[in-house]
Amino acid sequence: MSRKTIIVIGLAVAVVAAALVFDGVSRRRAANSGPASSQNPATTAPAGGAATASNAGTGVQPAAPPADTTPATEAGQNAAPGADAQAPTDDNAAAAAQALVVPAGTALTVRLSQDLGSKTSQAGQSFSATLDRDVVVDGQTAIAAGASVTGTVVFARPVGALAGEANLQLKLVSVNVNNADLTVATSVRSFGPPIKGKNKVGKFFKGLAKRAEGDEREVVLDDQTAYSFTLRRSLQIQ
Image 1 (cartoon, one colour):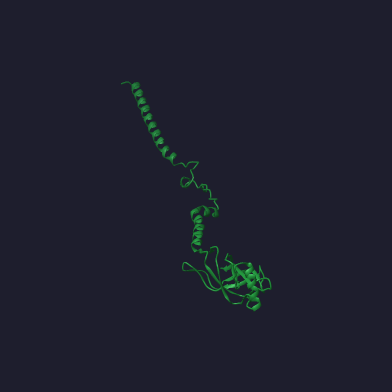
Image 2: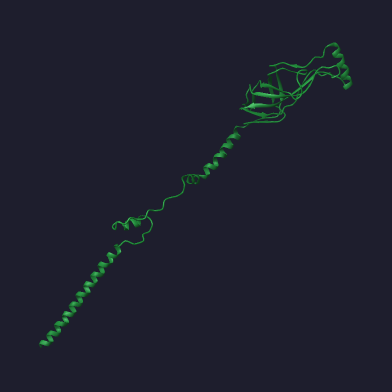
Protein backbone atom coordinates (compact mmCIF):
# COMPACT_ATOMS: atom_id res chain seq x y z
CA MET A 1 0.00 0.00 0.00
CA SER A 2 1.31 3.37 -0.90
CA ARG A 3 1.96 6.15 1.49
CA LYS A 4 -0.67 8.29 -0.20
CA THR A 5 -3.36 5.69 0.27
CA ILE A 6 -2.53 5.37 3.96
CA ILE A 7 -2.88 9.12 4.40
CA VAL A 8 -6.30 9.16 2.69
CA ILE A 9 -7.59 6.30 4.86
CA GLY A 10 -6.31 8.05 7.99
CA LEU A 11 -8.09 11.28 7.08
CA ALA A 12 -11.35 9.39 6.43
CA VAL A 13 -11.16 7.67 9.80
CA ALA A 14 -10.48 11.02 11.51
CA VAL A 15 -13.48 12.63 9.83
CA VAL A 16 -15.77 9.75 10.86
CA ALA A 17 -14.49 9.90 14.44
CA ALA A 18 -14.97 13.66 14.60
CA ALA A 19 -18.53 13.29 13.28
CA LEU A 20 -19.34 10.70 15.91
CA VAL A 21 -17.91 12.88 18.71
CA PHE A 22 -19.83 15.93 17.47
CA ASP A 23 -23.07 13.92 17.31
CA GLY A 24 -22.60 12.67 20.89
CA VAL A 25 -21.95 16.17 22.21
CA SER A 26 -25.06 17.47 20.45
CA ARG A 27 -27.22 14.72 21.98
CA ARG A 28 -25.92 15.42 25.50
CA ARG A 29 -26.61 19.13 25.10
CA ALA A 30 -30.13 18.44 23.88
CA ALA A 31 -30.78 16.07 26.81
CA ASN A 32 -29.50 18.60 29.34
CA SER A 33 -31.40 21.55 27.83
CA GLY A 34 -34.83 19.77 28.28
CA PRO A 35 -34.83 19.44 32.12
CA ALA A 36 -33.26 22.85 32.50
CA SER A 37 -35.99 24.53 30.48
CA SER A 38 -38.73 22.65 32.36
CA GLN A 39 -37.40 23.91 35.68
CA ASN A 40 -37.51 27.56 34.61
CA PRO A 41 -40.45 29.34 36.35
CA ALA A 42 -43.29 30.67 34.26
CA THR A 43 -43.37 34.41 33.99
CA THR A 44 -47.14 34.51 34.45
CA ALA A 45 -48.29 32.31 37.29
CA PRO A 46 -51.89 31.24 37.87
CA ALA A 47 -53.67 32.48 41.01
CA GLY A 48 -53.05 30.66 44.26
CA GLY A 49 -50.23 28.46 45.51
CA ALA A 50 -48.84 27.41 42.02
CA ALA A 51 -47.14 30.79 41.53
CA THR A 52 -45.64 30.63 45.02
CA ALA A 53 -44.12 27.20 44.41
CA SER A 54 -42.60 28.09 41.04
CA ASN A 55 -41.09 31.34 42.32
CA ALA A 56 -39.63 29.87 45.50
CA GLY A 57 -36.12 29.70 44.07
CA THR A 58 -36.15 33.09 42.36
CA GLY A 59 -36.91 35.26 45.47
CA VAL A 60 -39.84 36.94 43.70
CA GLN A 61 -42.87 37.30 45.99
CA PRO A 62 -46.17 36.18 44.45
CA ALA A 63 -49.02 38.64 44.15
CA ALA A 64 -51.44 38.49 47.13
CA PRO A 65 -54.94 37.19 46.33
CA PRO A 66 -57.68 39.88 46.33
CA ALA A 67 -59.24 40.46 49.75
CA ASP A 68 -62.90 39.72 50.37
CA THR A 69 -64.61 43.12 50.34
CA THR A 70 -68.03 41.85 51.40
CA PRO A 71 -69.12 43.80 54.53
CA ALA A 72 -69.63 41.70 57.64
CA THR A 73 -73.13 43.04 58.10
CA GLU A 74 -74.10 42.09 54.53
CA ALA A 75 -72.63 38.61 54.98
CA GLY A 76 -74.62 38.20 58.19
CA GLN A 77 -77.80 39.28 56.47
CA ASN A 78 -77.32 36.81 53.64
CA ALA A 79 -76.24 33.93 55.87
CA ALA A 80 -79.60 32.76 57.16
CA PRO A 81 -82.57 34.53 55.57
CA GLY A 82 -84.89 31.76 56.61
CA ALA A 83 -84.22 32.21 60.32
CA ASP A 84 -85.00 35.96 60.29
CA ALA A 85 -88.18 35.44 58.31
CA GLN A 86 -89.34 32.69 60.65
CA ALA A 87 -88.97 34.67 63.90
CA PRO A 88 -91.90 37.13 63.37
CA THR A 89 -94.12 34.25 62.30
CA ASP A 90 -93.36 32.40 65.52
CA ASP A 91 -94.03 35.57 67.56
CA ASN A 92 -97.38 36.12 65.85
CA ALA A 93 -98.37 32.51 66.43
CA ALA A 94 -97.47 32.78 70.13
CA ALA A 95 -99.44 36.03 70.49
CA ALA A 96 -102.48 34.47 68.82
CA ALA A 97 -102.24 31.45 71.11
CA GLN A 98 -102.18 33.68 74.21
CA ALA A 99 -105.22 35.80 73.19
CA LEU A 100 -108.43 35.15 75.11
CA VAL A 101 -111.87 36.11 73.85
CA VAL A 102 -114.53 37.03 76.40
CA PRO A 103 -117.79 36.10 74.64
CA ALA A 104 -120.86 38.29 74.38
CA GLY A 105 -123.34 37.62 77.16
CA THR A 106 -120.63 37.47 79.86
CA ALA A 107 -121.52 39.36 83.04
CA LEU A 108 -119.12 42.00 84.35
CA THR A 109 -119.75 42.64 88.02
CA VAL A 110 -118.34 45.97 89.17
CA ARG A 111 -118.20 47.85 92.47
CA LEU A 112 -118.88 51.57 92.25
CA SER A 113 -116.21 54.03 93.37
CA GLN A 114 -118.65 56.92 93.88
CA ASP A 115 -122.30 57.72 94.63
CA LEU A 116 -124.74 57.91 91.71
CA GLY A 117 -128.38 58.95 91.71
CA SER A 118 -131.32 59.98 89.61
CA LYS A 119 -131.19 63.47 91.14
CA THR A 120 -127.42 63.94 91.56
CA SER A 121 -126.20 62.46 88.25
CA GLN A 122 -126.56 63.78 84.70
CA ALA A 123 -126.70 62.08 81.31
CA GLY A 124 -123.25 61.83 79.73
CA GLN A 125 -121.46 61.86 83.07
CA SER A 126 -118.61 59.36 83.51
CA PHE A 127 -118.18 57.26 86.61
CA SER A 128 -115.48 54.92 87.87
CA ALA A 129 -115.67 51.43 89.33
CA THR A 130 -113.55 48.32 89.87
CA LEU A 131 -114.14 44.78 88.67
CA ASP A 132 -115.55 42.84 91.63
CA ARG A 133 -115.02 39.30 90.29
CA ASP A 134 -112.55 37.57 88.00
CA VAL A 135 -113.71 37.06 84.41
CA VAL A 136 -112.74 33.47 83.56
CA VAL A 137 -112.64 32.03 80.02
CA ASP A 138 -111.85 28.32 79.42
CA GLY A 139 -110.40 28.00 82.90
CA GLN A 140 -108.10 31.03 82.47
CA THR A 141 -108.51 34.43 84.09
CA ALA A 142 -109.09 36.87 81.24
CA ILE A 143 -109.69 39.93 83.48
CA ALA A 144 -108.64 39.87 87.13
CA ALA A 145 -110.77 41.33 89.91
CA GLY A 146 -109.69 44.83 90.84
CA ALA A 147 -109.29 46.05 87.25
CA SER A 148 -110.31 49.69 86.74
CA VAL A 149 -113.62 50.15 84.93
CA THR A 150 -115.20 53.28 83.44
CA GLY A 151 -118.91 53.77 82.84
CA THR A 152 -121.32 56.42 81.56
CA VAL A 153 -124.65 57.73 82.80
CA VAL A 154 -127.03 57.20 79.87
CA PHE A 155 -130.15 58.73 81.44
CA ALA A 156 -131.03 60.38 84.74
CA ARG A 157 -134.47 61.64 85.76
CA PRO A 158 -135.36 62.77 89.28
CA VAL A 159 -138.74 62.62 90.97
CA GLY A 160 -140.95 65.52 89.86
CA ALA A 161 -144.56 66.62 89.97
CA LEU A 162 -145.14 65.79 86.31
CA ALA A 163 -141.94 63.93 85.31
CA GLY A 164 -143.09 60.50 86.41
CA GLU A 165 -141.00 57.95 88.33
CA ALA A 166 -137.28 58.50 89.03
CA ASN A 167 -134.96 56.63 86.75
CA LEU A 168 -131.22 56.12 86.31
CA GLN A 169 -129.59 54.25 83.42
CA LEU A 170 -125.91 53.22 83.24
CA LYS A 171 -123.53 51.30 80.97
CA LEU A 172 -119.84 50.36 81.00
CA VAL A 173 -117.50 51.70 78.30
CA SER A 174 -113.97 50.49 79.13
CA VAL A 175 -111.91 48.18 81.33
CA ASN A 176 -108.18 48.41 82.05
CA VAL A 177 -106.25 45.21 81.27
CA ASN A 178 -102.43 45.06 81.31
CA ASN A 179 -102.24 48.86 81.62
CA ALA A 180 -104.38 49.37 78.51
CA ASP A 181 -107.98 50.62 78.41
CA LEU A 182 -110.05 48.23 76.29
CA THR A 183 -113.36 49.46 74.92
CA VAL A 184 -116.32 47.38 76.03
CA ALA A 185 -119.95 47.45 74.93
CA THR A 186 -122.49 46.43 77.58
CA SER A 187 -126.25 46.53 77.75
CA VAL A 188 -127.79 49.57 79.45
CA ARG A 189 -128.94 48.82 82.97
CA SER A 190 -131.93 50.74 84.31
CA PHE A 191 -132.44 51.53 88.02
CA GLY A 192 -135.69 52.71 89.59
CA PRO A 193 -139.04 51.14 90.47
CA PRO A 194 -141.23 51.24 87.33
CA ILE A 195 -144.81 52.41 87.66
CA LYS A 196 -147.10 49.75 86.23
CA GLY A 197 -149.89 50.84 83.92
CA LYS A 198 -151.55 49.91 80.65
CA ASN A 199 -150.54 53.16 78.97
CA LYS A 200 -148.84 56.47 79.60
CA VAL A 201 -151.99 58.05 81.02
CA GLY A 202 -152.45 55.21 83.46
CA LYS A 203 -148.79 55.40 84.55
CA PHE A 204 -149.09 59.16 85.00
CA PHE A 205 -152.08 58.91 87.39
CA LYS A 206 -150.52 56.05 89.31
CA GLY A 207 -147.35 58.12 89.63
CA LEU A 208 -149.36 61.04 91.03
CA ALA A 209 -150.93 58.70 93.57
CA LYS A 210 -147.56 57.34 94.68
CA ARG A 211 -146.11 60.83 95.02
CA ALA A 212 -149.12 61.94 97.04
CA GLU A 213 -148.60 59.02 99.37
CA GLY A 214 -144.86 59.67 99.57
CA ASP A 215 -143.97 56.25 98.21
CA GLU A 216 -141.91 57.46 95.26
CA ARG A 217 -138.23 57.85 95.98
CA GLU A 218 -135.13 59.02 94.17
CA VAL A 219 -132.79 56.34 92.81
CA VAL A 220 -129.60 56.30 94.87
CA LEU A 221 -126.65 53.97 94.17
CA ASP A 222 -124.19 54.16 97.04
CA ASP A 223 -120.42 54.04 96.76
CA GLN A 224 -118.96 50.49 97.03
CA THR A 225 -122.22 48.79 96.01
CA ALA A 226 -121.85 46.08 93.32
CA TYR A 227 -123.88 45.72 90.12
CA SER A 228 -123.63 43.46 87.06
CA PHE A 229 -123.62 44.48 83.39
CA THR A 230 -123.83 42.15 80.37
CA LEU A 231 -121.41 42.29 77.43
CA ARG A 232 -123.18 42.94 74.12
CA ARG A 233 -120.08 42.22 72.00
CA SER A 234 -117.16 39.86 72.54
CA LEU A 235 -113.94 41.28 73.98
CA GLN A 236 -110.45 40.06 72.95
CA ILE A 237 -107.79 40.06 75.66
CA GLN A 238 -104.10 39.94 74.59
